Length: 204
Image 1 (tube, rainbow, N blue to C red):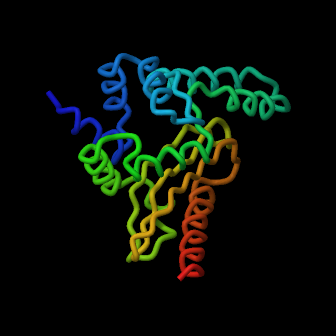
Image 2: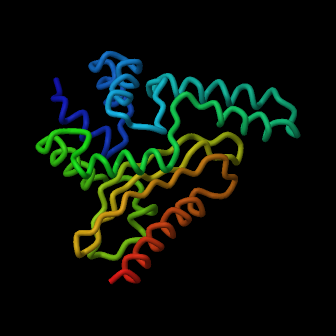
C-alpha cells in the first residue's frame, strides 16, 4: 500500500511508469485527466493514453518499421511521431509549469509540496541540470522515449530554473525524431540551460 504522495514522488523524481498509471486510474482514466487539464485551461498539452498504452504503441511502431522498406521508414516514423496520442508543445508545457509555480493551478500548500518533489528529481543529470552553475536550483521532470533504429522517440526535460536571486525561468526542451546519440541530444538540452544562465547574467 502506497500513499498518493509517494506515487507522485516516484512518478516525478524517478519517471516510474507504474506509479503514473496507478494515479491515472485513481483519477478516473486518461479522459478524466484531459478534462482536468481543460478545466484548468492548460493549453498545448494532450493526454490520450496511459504509460502502458504508450509502450504498446512503441512496440507496434517498431514492428511496423521493420516491415516497411528502409527508404520509406524515415517518412513513416516522422508521420507516426506527429500522431503521438500524448503530446505537448514546448510553449504549452513551459507556460503550464510557470502557472504552477505562480500558484495558478493548485492551492498554495499543494503547489509547495509538488514543487518540493520536483526539486528532488534525480533523472536527466546530463540535461538541464548539466547546464546550470552550482548556485542555481532546478525543479524538473524528464521524459525519454524509446528508439527505433537510430531515431529517438523523445528526449525531454521540463524544468523551473531558479537563479541565485530567486528569479525563475520555465523551460521546456522536447527533442523527437533526432538520429544523433543520446549524449548529443542531452548536450543540446544542457546548452539551453546555459543560454538561460547567460540571459540572467545579462539582466543583472
